[in-house]
Length: 290
Image 1: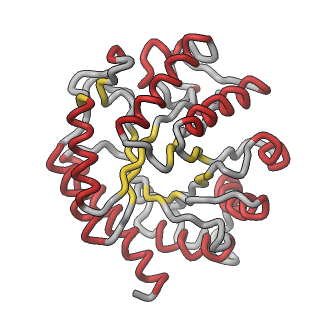
Image 2: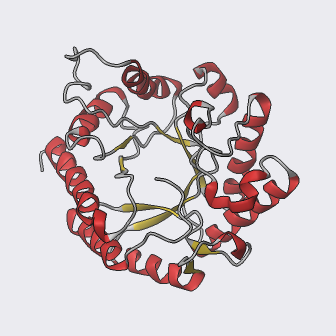
Image 3: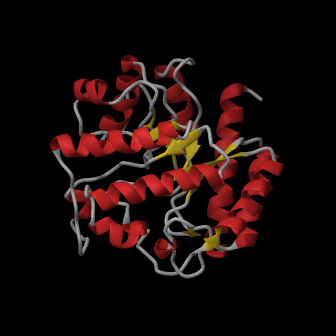
């Protein structure tokens, strides 16, 4: 979604999605916070309409009352960090590290010491930022250094780090740099209905093969995974993705599935969000035979 200086959030839609998640038996909600909160440590980040800390806490209590675990997410990839405001132009400086630590610490307090903390970290490439007015790409040791810094900030708060898959890195390098306590979410949003079959027809595109192979590569490397699907390209994604991942990822390492509709929580997109819940719940039931 393009950057907006005003919060796109419709509370009745938000509550309706949470209620339907509970009805369908889904048990976790990952909340991409960004600049939608007036953080006490850095209120200057907040955009117009951002929730106060108290308002956020009230929503967290509502989520928990429905039997759902709320999980905070802050994406620190430079391809997705416009939410950091002026600090997105201070990447890898002492001030940047200070602000990142402050925010992770505060969010963990707000969420009452969450078990998991996703950090994003995807798509930090020139290609993904070719239309940006301001683009930043860390490279080499600096990229790994900053990732390790953020992982340590999460660990220091007693939470388990969680990142999006690192597709353009060699698996040997991932093994060397990323410890096994980090949960990794590979993603696959295929349009085709046959992309997850043994012999796909039509043949897989390069990106599809890369993404599907990554699930198996992470399994062989021994990482815990939470694969991510979506309904933004096709309604058939989750019902194909779940059995594929159950086939190539061991029960020991497969920690669940994530649905990402990739749209704002507004009245306009209400039924796409509800559809994402519905499709995930039915894909799970179909696979489990329940």
